[in-house]
Image 1 (cartoon, rainbow, N blue to C red):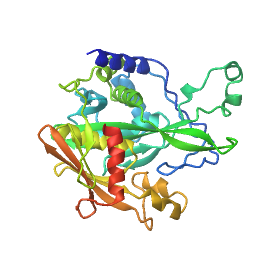
Image 2: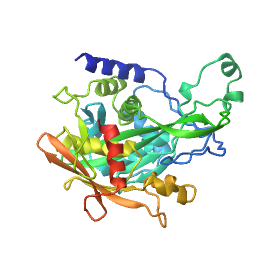
Image 3: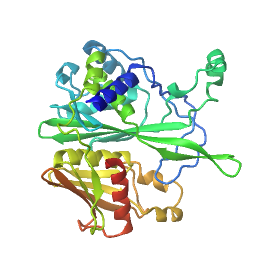
Length: 364
């Protein structure tokens, strides 16, 4: 109970302030060197977050009409009243009886209205992904910056970048919408700390919760209701953490203390956060179809190899990318996650172990 209240309080404190300010400067410079598994960054790409506040149906319709072409698939915001947030542990997602086709235009508009460019927009696969962006709200508000403003603003950098992936999944009751975050941090390297490189940093569940709240505002939910929905989403009945462990004696498998429905969602979120390219999924069969490559191959590939690998929907002709299946099978209140090769046979190589290792880091 106490930990749950603390988590709710933390989220409310986070979403209640002005701690998000993504904006674009319109000018791009040479990106820094990016380590394996990260897309090459434009050093100066920044995004603007519009002012908050509740969004009325009339305002939503007016904004949509002004910023996007009329689409027959676009649903009136009043029809989105059944939207609610569900929760499994620290993970939250939006659930609605509406179809994926009805929601998709709203999801596109949500990111574009905040200035984000979409690096991936694959309606058929139910995945969209933003480009890397900088949260300018983290910059210090010192005397020089407050006085000179935009004149010297380009000189400041947080040394961090974020990107978001939105995944839409059909369910028997309608549609679920997942928003996952990936982050990077710029670190100094070399004997004299004269160069910098980008390295992965941990995903931020609070930032994911904030984006879910703002998405609810976009869909016509009042601000107070959106905050309450994110902070008080129904937790699972069990207060015990769902442990994940490697299964000894199997090449690439782990067991998680979750029934299938929750395990399926958690594995999907772990794949998203770890940057895998999920090409397809079959919930009925419990299969995710993903792309992965042995990091040892990176040195033999041309620049941008990992950019193609970890950016959904891009072509991989001639890159030698291997395809795998991640199988999730429920066994009562537990589930087994296994890595299979492209033919559906359990993967016995090192790549399978690495995939399991990445998953268990997020699931444990």
